[in-house]
Length: 102
Image 1: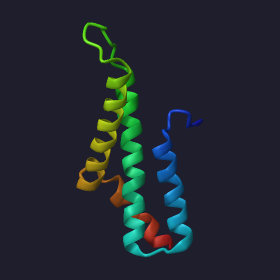
Image 2: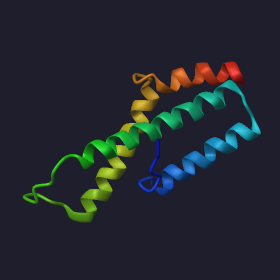
Image 3: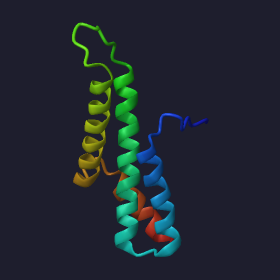
Image 4: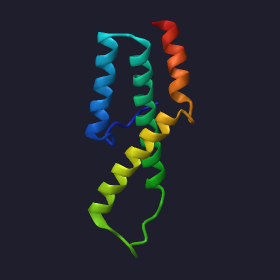
């Protein structure tokens, strides 16, 4: 399975670097939980990008590059809120599994 990281934004890459730094410094439960939520947020954001790429643009109403930037920022906030709500459950599952190993 090949993963294409070219669609990751700088913010996503920074989040991934922060996740790595947190694990090397301190493995407290609170930091592990936050790292799992951050990972879930990145995952949900990538899902949303993939879903949006399947929608055809008609060109009837187009905001151009400004709309694309706004949509990207909105999707990032949606993914953060979804992750914080815990409704998806990926972060919780990851936390349970990783806390057993640490």
